Amino acid sequence: MEKTKKFLLTEKELPTKWYNIVADMSTKPLPMLHPGTKQAIKVEDLYPLFAKDLAEQEMNQTDEWIDIPEEVREKLKIYRPTPLVRAYNLEKALDTPAHIYFKNESVSPVGSHKLNSALAQAYYCKKEGTTNITTETGAGQWGTALSFAAKAFGLELAVYMVKISYEQKPYRRSLMQTWGAQVIASPSMSTKAGRKIITEHPNYQGSLGTAISEAIELAMSTPNCKYTLGSVLNHVSLHQTIIGLEAEKQMEMAGEYPDVVIGCFGGGSNFSGISFPFMRHNIKEGKKTRFVAAEPASCPKLTRGKFEYDFGDEAGYTPLLPMFTLGHNFAPANIHAGGLRYHGAGTIVSQLMKDGLMEAVDIEQLDSFKAGVLFAQTEGIVPAPESAHAIAAAINEALECKKNGTKKTILFNLSGHGLVDMTAYDQYLAGDLVNHSLSNEDIEKNVKQLEHLV
Image (tube, rainbow, N blue to C red; front, side, top):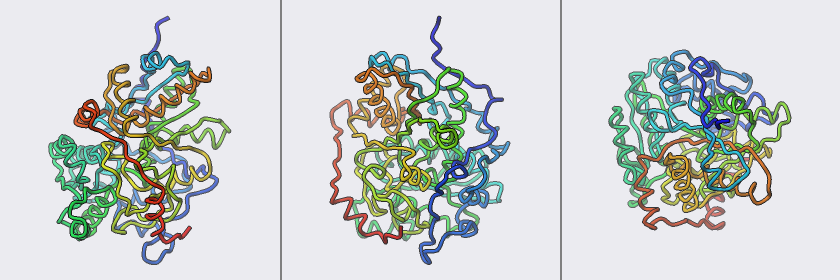
């Protein structure tokens, strides 16, 4: 019998609702706090910054299912549902009894999963009458996605791109500009936050925390403008659950159910998207699936960070978020997985981690590229450096199965392709990349500066 490799859904099977895991969590995430008063944020406190519908989704702890607007579903149909693929060739190369599946989000027009939330956020901003939006981007996947989404809904977009990625990934910048966005290297001289950082640290190569500060400042000082975010916050995780909801149906088509679900981890968007729909069965039905977040060893907020209230940005413009953090002043190493260079984890994931409903592993940069090259050689897709962390974690799980003689079903999220990240692969293949170590003293020094409000 011929082996089935790819499991496809029809447009009619595209989910009509997003899944809100907070409604099913027995221990809800702690509230966000106002940075000035230290009191719990109310939904109306978020209205100046976000579209009202997005603010309400952010604070929703009661509705398990939230309707996907038909206008958003129509745009999602450009590329969704995305394929679920059995990685037979990778299994063979590893000589493992494990069955490995991946959800291929790289087939979107922008090459990553980020478009799932970008289209939703652009729609809600347009619906409210907003004309301009701002955002930040690390490696460029989110900025690229939002550039396409802004154009689709007739919005003007300004993107603050982390300076090291702006220089390392010029084609990401070109993609954003092709879709009509203005792209600014962060830190920049265009905002008070940026000028302060450049004055104090003239050679600073930027961080997502810095870029967020600049994007928020521009949004708050520009008429008819809203801020949008590509990860970390609850409403972003909500929009991304379309990944796991599709994967549920596709795993059923494959006749299997995952023992392990894996996603790379920066702020939590793609990990949440693949994991939360399956996690609800652990919460509600007692299933025993393991959920593994794969983060870079040079930015290990889940494996080595502290659970504290912290700002989501460097300048302290955001509400205080209860999260696993390395401290908002943390300056991550200049690894090529720029989308994972963020100091904190989203509040939902942080609570799930505290409650033991998921786990995390840290992956060295060289190990991630080694895994990415093997995946490219076996499955034909060059993965984004971020996605390569999930692949490395999946390979480690598969090799453990080989060692123990156990047969497990492993599912990971291929969050994006790396075809505009070939500079990184060039450097890896030339032997010019290194691992980056981070001492406990560095982490303690940074986290010690927080207010310890938990």
